[in-house]
Image (cartoon, rainbow, N blue to C red; front, side):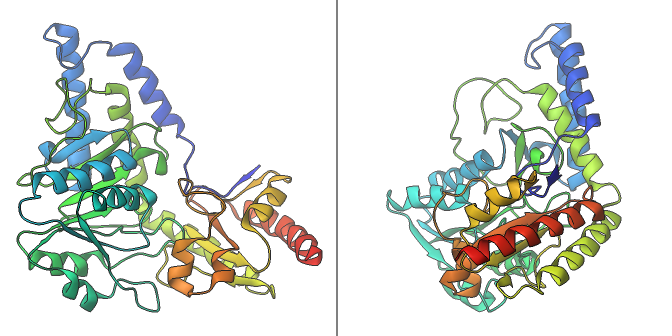
Amino acid sequence: MVYLDYSATTKPSSEVIDTFVKCSNEFIGNPNSMHKLGVKSKKMIDSATSQIARLLNVKEDEIIYTSGSTESNNLAIKGIAYKYKNRGKHIVTTLLEHSSILEPLNFLSELGYTIDYVKLDSNGMVDLNDLERLITDDTILVSICAVNSEIGLLQPIDEIAKIVRKHPKCFFHSDITQALGKVNIDISNIDLVSFSAHKFFGLKGIGALIKKEKIELTPIIHGGKSTTIYRSGTPALPLVVSLSKALRLALENIDEKEKHVLKLNKYLKDTLSTYENVRINSNDYSIPHILNISVLGVKPETMLHALEEYEIYVSTKSACSSTNSKSISVYELTHDLNRANSSIRISISYLTTKDEIDIFLKYFDICYKRLTCLR
């Protein structure tokens, strides 16, 4: 098997699984219980939270545990919109966002909020002048992802943050799900940050929203004491501790890991570029972990299933995107409907080997020749 869909999800590391199992067996008390088993669990969850805070250079009380990035994004967007609606009902974003950003914004638009989409330059980067133009006294939130999930475009987050900070009534939210654990990213100038553990070899079902302490949110889940007033529910101790372990491991030697991925990306890109009907959609502003290509005239799901016959796994778009539709991200970047209708995403990690890439290229060649001849 050759797995090249790391941007959709990663296999949990054995260390993370061991941590989860150990916590499940040894810390059975509810962290909110007053007896000694509860106190023991509370100390463990506090220790994990302290480590996450150190790793991300944030304060412990700024961490809100969630079920993952989708919930974090919904909490950030709806929480700000509901809490600060008296300030304004205008939100700015891009069309490169994940569906867990775009769909909550569509929902808010039905409630009377105005959503504007900032322009992109020819490289897919946010047009900073247009962003500055769009922010008004009525703007309460700018939500722009650090890394696009389909093409891998890495946005100039610090520059965006500087623009938002000129407007004291406006907050900056960034979904860093596809960046954290892959590339170095400074979140100190971002007001709200979303991420999910299963993108960096952690477990599914746990993520977080980092909310700077002076910001308030209206919760979207009510009822029951938890680690924070902003998200109710019994604290998922084994998941929280496993998140802490996964994050620590992901950030270790991150520069060396990225160099390995960059080398594989270049090899992939150089080889695939030689095919007449292949177009490389990812560019120099994309992180090396994501390589988006189009095989012109071949439906992406057709190529996906052709490769699957050889136990090679890629994706057509973000795993949460609707099926049988063009890639909005590819279209926004290329303005080419043919490329948007035929794109596939190859996503690799520091665990990917050159041998795996060679196997992929061998069978891609077979599939490419068979499918392009059928047209």
